[in-house]
Amino acid sequence: MLAEALEHLVRGIVDNPDDVSVRDKELRRGSVLEVRVHPDDLGKVIGRGGRTASAFRTVIGALAGRGGARVDFVDVDRRRR
Image (cartoon, rainbow, N blue to C red):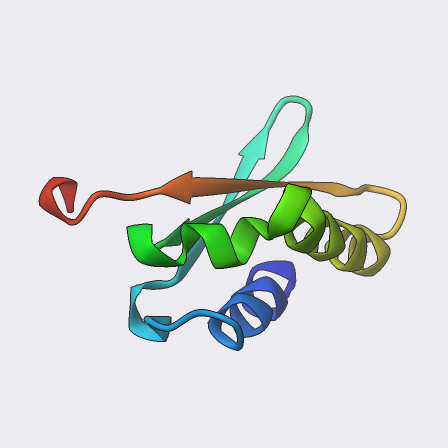
């Protein structure tokens, strides 16, 4: 559920919504949501001073509740896909 919500939010602000993917990884220290976007959209997702990324983390943290979830934004070069 968290991955779908985050993907929906990210797709709403990027220029290349088809290149957005969110993967939910379970690690020892908890859940990690890995967001991959087109390299041209990375600046939009992070925002000035990291404000947009912080807002995404706040919303997902509220949805996650006590367990929490970490959000990582990854720059993906098209050649490595």
